[in-house]
Length: 325
Image (cartoon, rainbow, N blue to C red; front, side, top):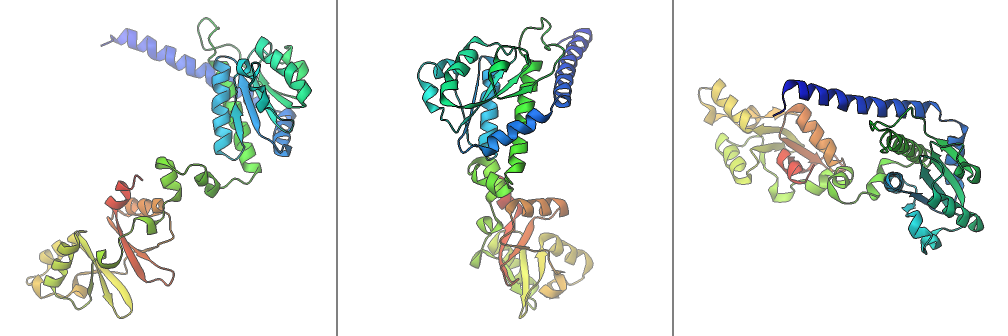
């Protein structure tokens, strides 16, 4: 284990790195101007895709920005400038917009790529810290990053600069998302799998227990019938109904309280044990909403209703957890 002095030094150094990067992002935010809006217009007006490219660490950031654009409604691809110059430039079409990343604004590979793209009439946006560099004179829109120095103690390794590029790319993606009116439903379509997709798309109707799986007794059912129904359906609860529909719910806790409060609990009916007017949600509600309500109210069971308001299912907290929510 590190001694206290060494640990304190490391903590201070780590905080300094984050401080420098945060300052870079703040400074970059302050220099966002009309060119940012021009870049948004250029992409919105394009009938093609956005092609991201960069060299080294900037290329890795370009790849991430491309992925963010794709997931938020702006079709995008990433290509290495070296690969583009050796055949892959064919993916660029006249209606596309290129977004290039270069800290210095003088990357030889990007300079050659820009020269090759000029014959294809591809419009170009440059994210750079070198607004006076050679690339800046050959592109349509410049999005500057502003930083005092890299967080690297040698002021060499791309750290603050790549963080600023990433933040600026995220800003571009989010503004485009808003301009397109990209909604939660659209996001769900782009994320059909995994935990995120399930949280966005799963409904209570997808996980609820239906038909004979629903524990239910009449309001005049005996104490013994209530216990048998709870045991048979293995949910730790039963709904209570009369001719008008569901009127209550009985949980294991209600049974325990009936023993505590009554000398002869076995003589009670379901109506005398139940908790009335149970909380319900429509089957069309999101499963996440059901989970949030159960967690907030510290309950384990949620009756689910159909379009007419009648109970058509029941969900247990464990059902939602097992579904991956």
